[in-house]
Image (cartoon, rainbow, N blue to C red; front, top):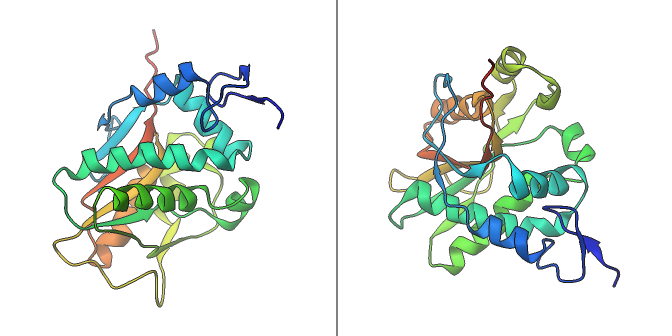
Length: 223
């Protein structure tokens, strides 16, 4: 009932569409998925596709969703992430989405499993477009420091022991060779998290076809 701030630029507007003003909606929908690979890329990092750079309206909308409890943004962000999955996989085929799991403390701090919500909306969008898709959760996260406060070396060290294969059911039967297993994450920075989850899946004979993320950080150049 009350005017809300645009998640992308912070402007107070009564014309928000799914949390963003018309200008930010145009910026977000104008992004086109493309390859994204950190330099240097860690071993075992699967081919990664990102919607766009971690900047502008995309960055601010992700922060509003993850850090400020704007749960309603899961639907439009999930729709955008579905476009990234399509770009990553290419031809229509069965897809198994595997969201990178969060630790329990991080999920509590961020108002729940933010990637799980994104995966649900992404799968719904793909199904509506005729894609055979399911969401699997074969990996669990072990306690580790929040990566936001870590440098690249510390991120790599923490990721090495951060994930384990779940025991028992994890959302369905193991995907067959015709199924594209796609990792989902919101942001790729150094790639060590996606590489670590990929190693766990490879050990379980579920090698990822690729990874789909919303944003990729850009390395700053120092003079």
